[in-house]
Length: 215
Image (cartoon, rainbow, N blue to C red; front, side, top):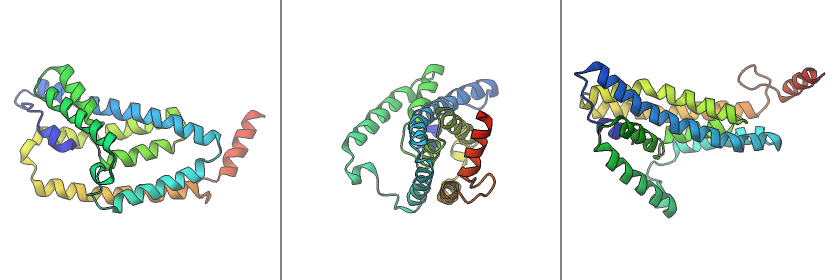
């Protein structure tokens, strides 16, 4: 959904300064939503950490990411019977239609905010990752960095407009499932305590470090 909405903004690149400020206003609207959602899920991740289930949660999230990458794309909310979710998405799309017709900076920012709430496999994968961070700060930072990482591609999408062919967009979309699988594997390894530096640190080492700090 991000691409079509970006192409519908109708920004004129002939004025570079105006185009850049308007484009970034929209982009940071998306990043703001991602960051807030990351903080919210970070609360649940913090609870899991206190409950001592952070490792099983990391493994479960990794499996979920891989499943999301390989499941058929036509398993949407309508097919699964999530009517409340479908109604919410309808309201968000109605709001997007309203603000897309306006060219004010505030409208562009709100468009970005609402866009961040639309279904997107890459965003779902990132959100599950923020849940595994185990803290509010970690979840917030994770999604903030994810949002920043999406800006170059989305900024270019608005800049290039229809110059980006459908074939090119499809090629980019085909890469995303592979990225999700790789992230899923990393989260599974993270939860397995294999004592691999940075990838799968052993929890015993972490506990020793905490005890030593307390002493």
